[in-house]
Length: 214
Image 1: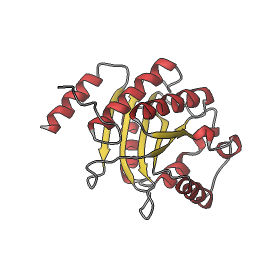
Image 2 (image 1 turned 180 degrees about the vertical axis):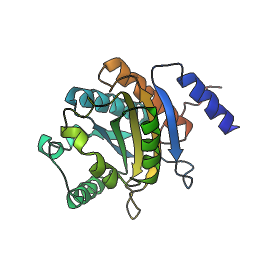
Image 3 (image 1 turned 30 degrees about the vertical axis):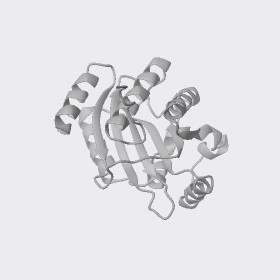
Image 4 (image 1 turned 135 degrees about the vertical axis):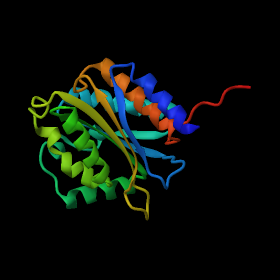
């Protein structure tokens, strides 16, 4: 039954400018709740990053979940240059010390065409099952101003990582949505966030539907 509902949900979303092309949830996870989430938007556009992280944290606040923007945690120097494994390990430990238990990591990727897009999605499924690996393999997005100029197809990948104490920093969920541009307009950002929240709600990840009043 849930498969049918999900297929219908995808058909509805396909009518908008943004379209879900992939959604994967860790089969070992039924429900996942977080108490404090770090919201990371990886893009070379500082204004888009600010808008996305601000609006996403507002969604968590509405849900009663504490969250923080990465722009309030990472200084400019951190995102403007290459980082190492050790530095990302230190970031994760700092997050644990500050009682974070999840990271919502969103990045805007590009592809030459739909064929290479399919290949990239396959690579995403096989790799980057931890936040550190995901960040390190895509960190050039932050400081490469010409990153998007070579692409014609754009998609946004959002990954939810658990950074719980005494557990691996494992991937909980990954959703990929194709968009018409590299998400620079406020309208596109809001549309994307609504899709992310709806999908996480459907998958029982942090966001919960309000119970209907009897």
